[in-house]
Amino acid sequence: MTLLLTSLYQMPKLEAGLFMSLLAFLGAIVRPFGGYVADRVTGVRALLVLLAAIAIGDFAFAIWMPPVAGGLAILVCLYIAFGLGNGSTFQLVPHRWKGKTGLLSGIVGAAGGIGGFYLPVIMGIAKESTGSYQMGFTTFGVLSTAAFGALFLLRGQWLRWSSASAHAHDAVAIGGAHAME
Image 1: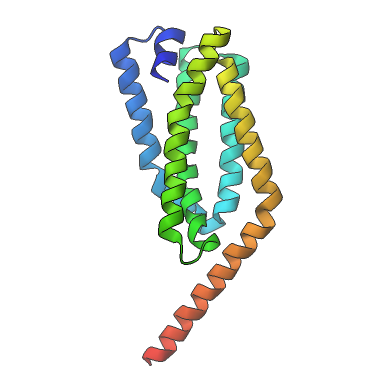
Image 2: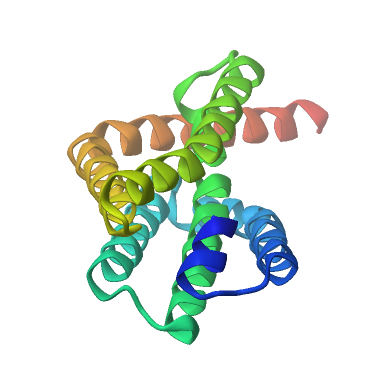
């Protein structure tokens, strides 16, 4: 992504690297808030909104290829959505895979790391093969839309798992309170 800033916006390499570091930090710092929001509205609902926002941001960048201020604003919004989505995703793990939270959290984290690795690779391939980053943003817009669609179709099942997990947790908490009396 640093190359996007240097080639598309002629940003000096040092500034581009610092800006990308800031984006990575921003994405990391909002992860707990993504989990907090997911705890309030469910990870499924949070992810549906965030995947839609990511798709819109990617498609907006691909169609508009904005000037520097617009491009930086879209990147900031995308990285915030990435971080919030990360926190929301981890909220789902214990609801779906009881007793395997550690293993599945590791797998989800690894998948995120691989995704983070492929982001600049796909963008570089798009730039090399077409001369523009538009196809890269379009690719990620399509992937985000596909993830949104899959989650939308499966949301009922995920929400049942989440609801069953919440009821089980409440029952244990209530039973534990009675046992202490």
